[in-house]
Image 1: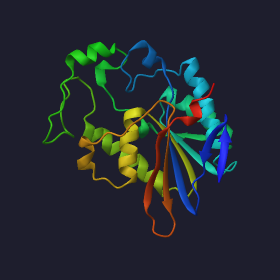
Image 2: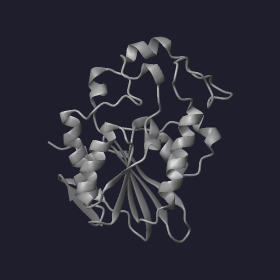
Image 3: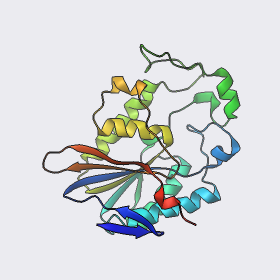
Image 4: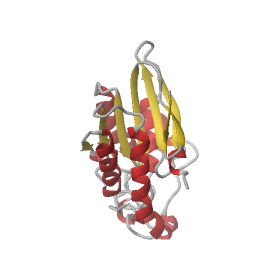
Length: 225
């Protein structure tokens, strides 16, 4: 079945099963100010808030009213996005701090150039999950991945047929990795495309129980005049 929101053609996932829509929050103040995000609690910009409502309208066209659960990172920029979505789909956003972006420790809220000057890139091989990036207080990839996987375990245990997960750009990679059953040990080598305000559609059928990545970081709902 095809639907339209803002004149953009959307495709509903057909068949019985469950669908998870993973939303990366739209433009936030740290983006435009050139600051390190992570756990820094930046807000949506006016453009980001506009796009949050576009995301909400797109999802409302796909999810029956009152039939979708919404779980969000507790960061302000994610909460603003999730609240718009929850209102549109007739739900209430539940906060889960495990869906936060990777922490960059003392670099958070500082200019991106400050982090770039101090950041130690991970090696091409070996143990990338426990690599020390040279920034006090920053999470390792291993710690980051473990908490996102735990959050996804809780989300996938929920019987809701439609579930919206609101998170962050880098966190999206780990959410998708958890969904497809990628071993945590491999997460240090993977990175999926993430766009602000993008919707990633994940689906599991109820017969084979195969897990699909139907769409990755789709932003067609934002591309309107």
